[in-house]
Image 1: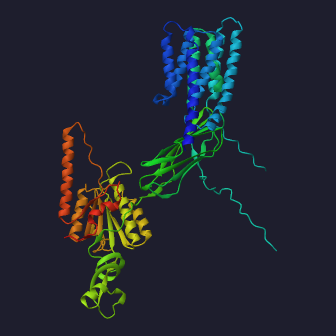
Image 2: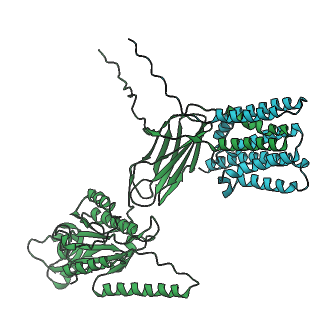
Length: 175
Length: 439
């Protein structure tokens, strides 16, 4: 019993620590390019990350989303280099994936849960790399690019939304 | 010719031990919190890119959008095969009950959370258990009910996540019967007049028992082994030892169910039923007949009867006592067989309700041998800073003392029993005394 509790605690602490590292990274990475009063955002972001990890505010799911939104705001204000933005995007994805992890998981279960997240992380990183390459190629500023991005966002959301399963077609009866 | 051994093949729908038979539970799938999070961040990124006219910001949202697209949508069933069982279905307070929740439908992530009922504690297993990677999910807990009654021991909430969809189920096991744990005691409370039936209690009359009763002169027919040689040699005439007779007793336990005060699992009614179970066990063990009368709600009674089965009859009757009522009990309705004239009546009561005190008066007028066991262990809460509340509590204590003194003055012994001590300690003031009928 004690051993199981210890295993649970260890797996949970490790996952929370990893989430904290990713969260802190996504807040700190765009910090050097922030304007003068940017420290307020950094402080708010770090506090939100800390709140999303433990304590009563961790139950409130919006805390994690707010922390990621602060990171987006920092990047929008600082406008760092493309490579930094790509890294920031991957950090945001990692943080959002891990902040959803169930608290009570044993070591083996936590490993299996992490393995389930791997394909999502892989596709996220690959997409980030592709977009980075596309943006790195010098092209004139075009509104079409923004429209394409917005369209991709809408399409991805529409594809990912849960749908009702179709009723399987009845097999024809042989005559 | 020898026959080949026949091995029994289990039927396809046969339930394996330890595996709960599942039932289809309809569910409604909703967007998982992750979907909402990802969509919120993607929209925020697109808005930021448009407002700042900086296409590079789309790099922040690209991984999230890709993750949304990559998240498995799966074919989410409209109903899930789930079940929860609690075994054994009957136990005593403080014994372990194994609860197993099963979800046969394979899903990405299943979180089981158990919420124990009132006065039930989790003895083994984490409250929240997670199963991942699409295998049939199963969670096990060991619960320990600390209060008697017929009630469901827990509620299990199952939260299922599949891709970016989420559904939740609430499972409740069948109610189990928790018998009160009888406190250790002995059958020491006895009426002054025992029955004619042979039993195990020493009567105040000569007979064929083992306890010494007295000495008398020898009569033809007496056994020689009963001769008291010391008295015989001193008086010069043969004298023999007399033994006390062994007789049986009838015990009627009354439970005052009008008041139920205290924290769950330790209320006055909990204590009363535990005490009743303890006394019933002790008297049934000595071969006496035990009956029960429940005051409160609907007036219920069970005529005195011997044997171990009577214990379970009494306890099962007690399961129905938590029934609030404004009715006044009319003891005239209790038949003579349920309240025999020479029975010892033990009333477990917190002495708070006027109707219970009226019943005491009624019993006194009937001339039964009556003992009251006061089961009130909690005082009204007093605020230390407010002198008035402390004064009120002191007045309340005085009132209680006056009530007990008046009952004792009427010839009805009042014993006080705290759940922390055995029932035998509560009976100590009456040890060696017989309870006389009062009128």
